[in-house]
Length: 239
Image 1 (cartoon, rainbow, N blue to C red):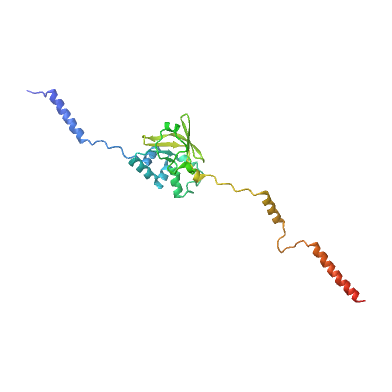
Image 2: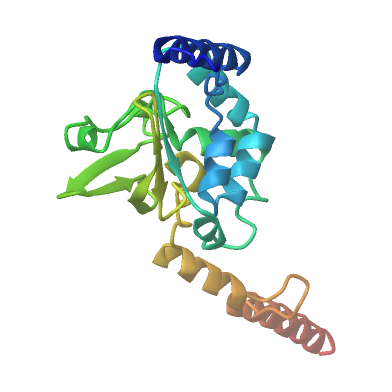
């Protein structure tokens, strides 16, 4: 004669089995530390920026700051086509120190959401240095939902949000932000004054030293009178 297992006992056995199974399953690993290069790699089209972040060691600085402090960051990220639009040899002409300054110019040392750009105070301070001295001015203006960034050398537009977690904000911009201290126009040479041109013209028309020169008429007259006197004296002496 078969004895059926009571339903309550079956349910208890099932629950114990599920509990044992869950205990053997490892808990999901906590999310890894923020990594700026991984964020950009996932977004794609940021090969040049990633290379600069690594060679200048700014990637390590960003990751360390984000994972070891509560201080947020905002990063403007130009894609590869923005770097390709620069004049040929622009990046190669920069020293290592200047490349660091260029990357730091794209980093604001606090978190800014898109809505906060509406009320931000200009000029913005960047990691490249305080903009008060005019070397690294960075100004943000908004028009509706559009955010524009001006450096004094070029103007860029925030194209979209790549990443945000209320501590780090990464925004794609359509141009490389060129700081005034590195890419400001050199002063034009001073024009030559008209009087200087006249002096140069007069110098060009003057005879070359050691060449033929005009004879002073007074000297010629003096020499003529001297010769005439000698001839007259010889003529009188013969009589």
